[in-house]
Image (cartoon, rainbow, N blue to C red; front, side, top):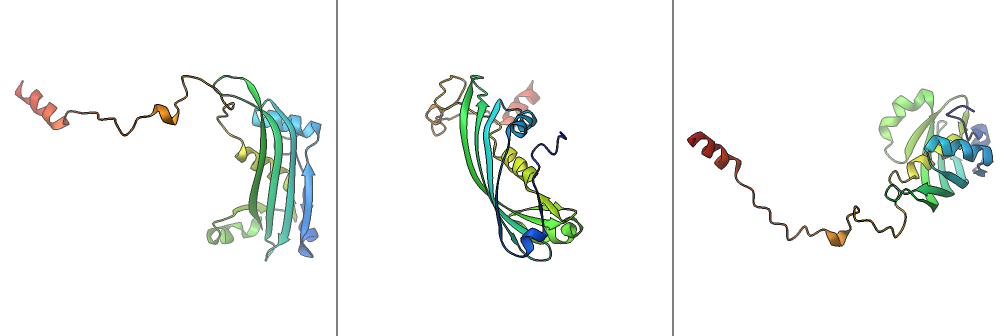
Length: 176
């Protein structure tokens, strides 16, 4: 499998032009294993994404998605594996690659993704959105470690650090 195509599901634009298109995609065992390696996480138990795609204008496709996943993540503090449930909505606009330079400046939100050859790979888009959702520094819930600062440990209001004026220090050096 190519590194970019572990989870490929192609939808042709002509399928969306006539009416709204709704679909659900789910990663099989081989795809979950490949994505696990790609994202360096211990295990993906399930990965499903629901899409609502609609034709916008000039070949633009608006996509609304919902990712649901169950994974095993690794705690950066205790190094223990722990289960994580993910449920996240996202919205994207797909624009033909030849239009992207002109159109990108006018669109801020939602994210814009280019497509070529009259199809959109919603599997790869799902993998990319999944990567954005993953916590880069996962902490196991209720982990008790002295290295983790908690809000009640911080006493910012009562910190009164008196520092010498740097010009006074220079003045003392000048006198010597």
